[in-house]
Image (cartoon, rainbow, N blue to C red; front, side, top):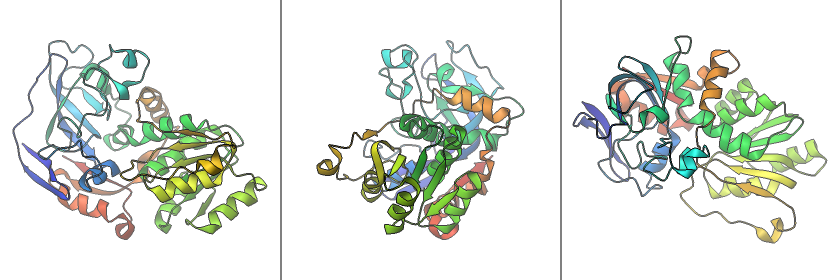
Length: 345
């Protein structure tokens, strides 16, 4: 089969590799029907995730058809259409029992495209298949479902829920890429008074407005002025970092109100300064986190019921064997306007 293989910092190839095989009784093999590229994949290529080693097949967001299951797999069968979660969980360790699958101690967590081969390929092995796949109803398309592999549960859990968004809050989301846009969409579920999206790219700010942001701004002094005008100078109730840069994180801590929440979602490759000389007295809660995907079943039900409509986030579509072109388009989002790119068989 062919797969997108990481060859070291800045290097990748769409090349012929060995087909995946069942390695444990809890594995499944799926044929990849739809797959996307995540901002985390770009962070890997920049060298921000050194635990990814050359030779690794990238990717952790896919929908596929089951072609083989291990002897211990009971929840899915050959021919089933499934969402492959970005997080794998053994289901037995103390973290999994608490629903913290991202911290699985028995070989799970974020492993696809990280510590084991991922899903940007014609076929993929899915470890812990009963815990790490979700059967899809016919009413949900591949294009809709693939956005629930990572970005929607990540933004919802690590951003909205960790940030404790409440009705009437002023919510600011720094970064209107796919993760930030998913945060806009899921924050809207809690009826905040205002959702403010901040980004340099006008196209992304337009997309944020379409998905539920009522105000937008470019990074700079006007952000602080806008938030001050909305809150009587107090600051935002919840600020989410959806970029993964020191500047974005520091902006979050500068505009949050006393007693507010900063929810860091972005993947960081460099240190950020924590200004405790200003923050120590303000009762600020700062959260970080890897998604656990415990909300994926809920999000799937909402999608099936028409309460979520993330399909507009996909701006570019390619056949799977054009994945190198798709990477080029996605990596130049500022020029191309790309939000999510979709590759299909």
